[in-house]
Length: 303
Image 1 (cartoon, helix red, strand yellow):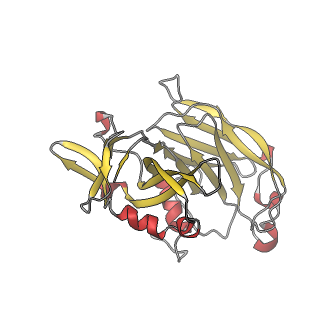
Image 2 (cartoon, rainbow, N blue to C red):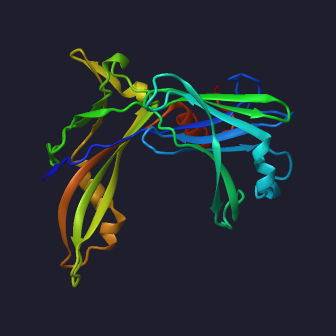
């Protein structure tokens, strides 16, 4: 059985999740009995036309009550000044811009542990970010004149080395297949600014149920693996790239275990193979560390 690779995909995404108290310092204080902690959530995407920042602060008191109180978690517009610095599209020099705000209505969610059913303020910029560049967010708290500064680097683009588009893949093969990708820029030594990669395959097919007149497109997700970028980096024959192995024949196990196919395969159903897609997602160091902490069973982490 053979399929075709029809699409290549890369995601340039990165997050800032920082709790920084000291003025002009990059020190992260996990515990603080004094003062206020400023918290920033942001997803920096070089491919987006707008990048948003959610800026909140800590509170002292009953979390069950105050987590649902918008004013207890957020700054008023005139309490902080927010600037964003970096090299933006159309310029070769670093620029510093003041971020504007926008309010968005978030519908009430009875299951949410945080506030909802209210307008929420986001800071944003429509300046186009560039790949592989460092950006700095600075927040000045007017009440105590504290500057909170965080830096993050956007992910540079990468391209597939193997397989190539429209290459035939034999899924009867029990030998290991390899997915390889690299940064096309030799000035970076072909290394990425991403900290973590996740490789996923999608088996796309067309389905016609008995008695139906129209086909329906379906997809089955097949996680192939994930790891830190440094563990996937390899060099061979004077070429540097990232690689992940998988067994093509394992696709049949994925199909056999799929709940939808088990429960929706009546006699007479017809299915046609469509494209087979590999998708590589990448995240930056900040988002990776945040992911590790939020998925940990312990609140105590190595620095």
